[in-house]
Image 1 (cartoon, rainbow, N blue to C red):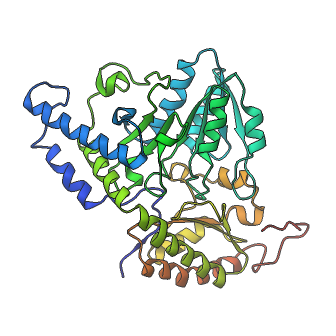
Image 2 (image 1 turned 30 degrees about the vertical axis):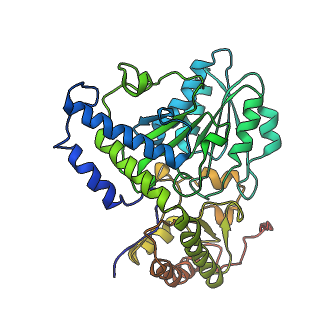
Image 3 (image 1 turned 90 degrees about the horizontal axis):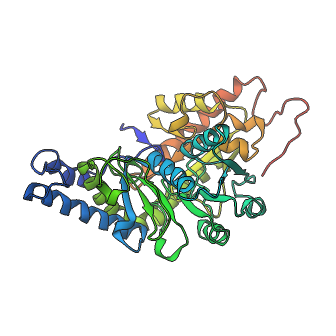
Length: 399
């Protein structure tokens, strides 16, 4: 029986069509795109074509608004550090308490080093941003707002268009970490006030080690990596040509499959959740049920350890995760779920299932079949006893 892969928010399988387009650029088309002879010009033309494919996917006004990077982490770091340098008269950052570590850890470092004051905006039980606190944090001191389009653990979607409008009114730049959103939900940047947006190739069936940062035409920007004229002087270094070609093809395919993400993949996610919740008591889905990525399901199981659940799922041939791959190995509970104030009985028992266009009904049914027995067995070993038996003094309830 083939293994089931439901950890697509960590990385996706690269589409064979993307790989096929990349291969010639390792050997036959090896020229440096900055060279003026035919070897370089052929490669330069291919990069331009890839840039236009990405422009179509994210709805950018101009293809030159796209800067190729090494991935989401570099794009996120570049956006925040660029804003601070480009707007030296401002020294504050607004972000959320549930951002990816590539944003949170940078912001924490900047605050500890005295380079910026950071406002970490909280979320409610469904992972929705505290809009009153967000508005209160905006001022003439804020250089940049960095809010993720969709959360990598729960799939909760933020109203980034409206948030960008509020940031713009305060004179701040707005950056969206859209690593999890691009290719799963429609993106049309030309109709928004978003100044910068990050994405990563391996999250949308492209290669690892390649990503992009959208920078709106006219937005104030300072490069993070200096030393060459590549990317119009905004990101120095010889381009990762095969990666760019693969990302371009992946973007084209993602746009073609977008309706499938919104319908078939969403239906499979709902099938998974209904099956699991019907078969396992004291389980709950985390995240906004109405505004969530179509592929993401984060389910918490009371009185069972998420890591133990994953181990047993792996033995059953199912790959999932407890959250971000960038925090794998940590014994601390998810900072996202802590910010959402999950009860202690469920905080360590959350499992993230993330589907993709490769997922089929049989994959979902395997999970629904295997999971009830796994959770029941682990709950028998719990110090709090069977499901539903709360420890003395713990009377918390939740929806």
